[in-house]
Amino acid sequence: MAPTGLTIKSADGRYIRLIEHALQSYGSSKPDNDYATSDDWFAPEIAKIIKEQDEEVLKTADVVKKEFSAELDGEPRSFLISKFPIFAEGRRPVGIAALSLD
Image 1 (cartoon, rainbow, N blue to C red):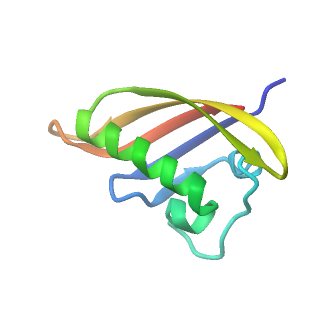
Image 2: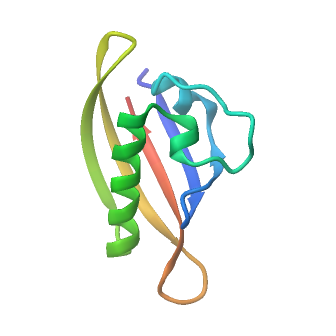
């Protein structure tokens, strides 16, 4: 079975909900502070990719699907990511949800 991750974060990039398996997939662990950002949870090269994808979702207010590869713990890994905006009242996204498949 392929590992699946789920994250929900506010539009300012702070995680509201993150399935801990998602952290393990990226070779990370939970930080001490609540509402951490990608910079707090992930290695710099992974955080950069995550933030770029988030910016695209917020800019387009649409679903963004990406595939990317990275070396984690000395092993090549590939990820399929689907991110989509979360809306409250109005047309601007208030958050981002993401599903990832390793």
